[in-house]
Image (tube, rainbow, N blue to C red; front, side, top):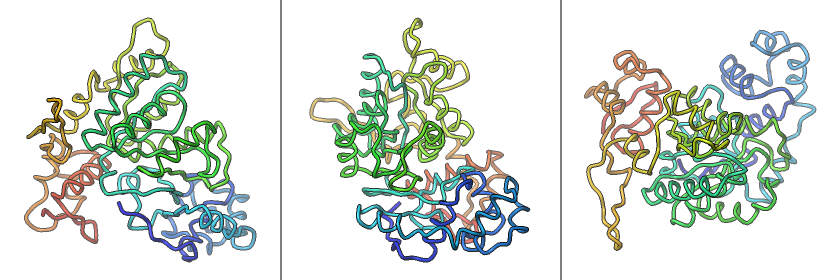
Length: 375
C-alpha cells in the first residue's frame, strides 16, 4: 500500500463520495450496487426501476440515489479534506488496502490522515474492554510492544482502555499503528485522545469511512469494527465481557476468515468471560507474542538485541500450511486464482488473504485478469 495520490477533484472520487453520502446506502447495499452496476457513476446514472432490482433497495432509496446528482454536492467534504490534509482513498484506487478489498462489505471510501505503507499489510488488531483492568492494560502493552518490535503493524480503534494501551505501546516501541475511527477524522473520539491521534498521524495513520465532521454514534462503532478486522491478518482480544464490542470485532474476523487470538484472564473476572468463550470456540490462546508469530508461520532466524533478547521478524517467517498450499498451487506459468481455490479447497477469502501475505513477502505478483505468478 502506498500513500494515495487521488486528487480531490477527480470525477471518480466525486462519484464515490456522492454515492456514499446517500442516506441509506450502507456497506452491504453499496456492495450490492457496485456488483450490479460496476462503478459509482453507473449507479448514479441508473433509473429507479433499475435500482430497485438490487436486493435491499426500495422505492424511497432508489429515488434518493437518483436525486443524489442534484441534491448532494461533495464540494463541502472535499474542501474540508483539502484544508485538513485528509486523503480520500476510493475502493477502486490501486492503493486501497488489498486485505480490506477482500471482505464481503468493504468501504466505498476511506478518509485518512498520515500514510499507509506496504508493510501495513502485515498487521494484527488488538482490541478489548474500554473499562480495562490493570491486568488487561499490562497484557495489551506487552503484546503490542512485541508485535511492533517484530515489525507488525498494530491496528486498534482509538478507544479508551485496551485500544489506547495498544496504540501507545506500539508507538513506544518505535513501531507503526493504525487507528480506525467510528466518527470522522475531524471529530476525534474520545476527545481526550486528540494528542494520541496526533502521534498516530506521525507514525501510522488515522482511518475512517465516515466524512470528516461526522460525529460517532453507538451504531457507527460496530460498523467500524469490520474495518479493524478486515485490515488485519488476525484479531487479538485482550479483555472482553460477555457482551462486548471486541467480541463483535472477533466475530467479524471469523466471518472474514481471519485468525482470532485471545488472552485468558482470571476465572472470576467479568472482563475475561468473553475471551474464555472465544477460546472455547477455537481461538488461538496467547500467552506471549510468540504465539501470534507462530500462528503466522515458523521462524527461520532470530536477531539478538543488545540486551540479549531475540527479535523475530515477519519477513523471515517460513510459510505456514495455508501459505504453502497456496504457493504450491501456483505453477510456473501465471495461474488463475479460481484454480488455486479449487486445488487447495480453501475458502475463497482465505486464499485471497493468503495471496496478500505472499505478495507482501515478495513471493508472488498479481497480474491482470485474476492471475498470479511466482517471482
